[in-house]
Length: 149
Image (spheres, rainbow, N blue to C red):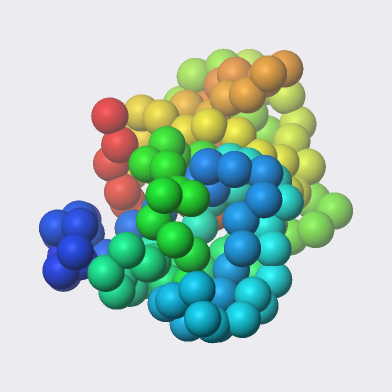
């Protein structure tokens, strides 16, 4: 996915990253003078960087809320949420990247996990207690068709 890059980082914008700490202040603007709009309280959550300003990154969460966080509170580690837009629905985690392979687990909407090796259709999705493959379109934290090594 090629696109514009941030003037500060030189990295693609938009892009997905994850929260580094259990407490991350989200501000209404890109300075400490701006008020805290809300606080994330869970490390590892995926967020999308939508803009950069010096050492600040404007982020969007899975609910579509946007605000500014200090760059050091973000990690390049890729994580994702299972179908956060479909509360109450379970999604199959497969042994191999195929709906014909055995189901390893049924994951509820909102489950958080690490992501690697996406081929544009399937991603390896894992955390303590589960490891397998999930259809990429079922995850918030990777773009449709995005390839990850």
